[in-house]
Image (cartoon, rainbow, N blue to C red):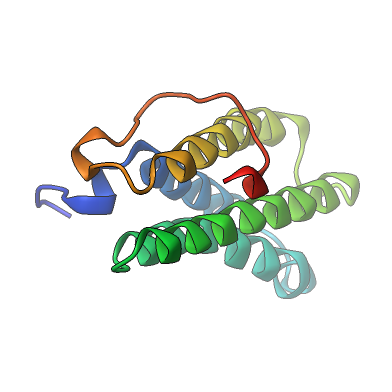
Length: 139
């Protein structure tokens, strides 16, 4: 947008969620009406929800609220994985598209979990590197 990023926009986890959402958007734009009306809408809502919940949680006044929204983002990522599996089984996405999406999805879950663990620490020290996966309920 031609301006310097600040706050949540600087978070690697947020940037990756945007990238995943944009790739999914480009893929589903070419689908036929029925596929767009069923799977595409659900998929786009799920992937857009990941970034939206990171942003909303970041703007909350308490660490507890922020964590709650990040947990919702994790759930949205799992929902997106479901819709991507359905799209592949129904031959709406091909192996090449799967290979484009897989690294984004596989990297995003550990980043979400690392971010979740970091909440409550100073915002200046938020992690921007990969963390080992955990379950969202461990925090």
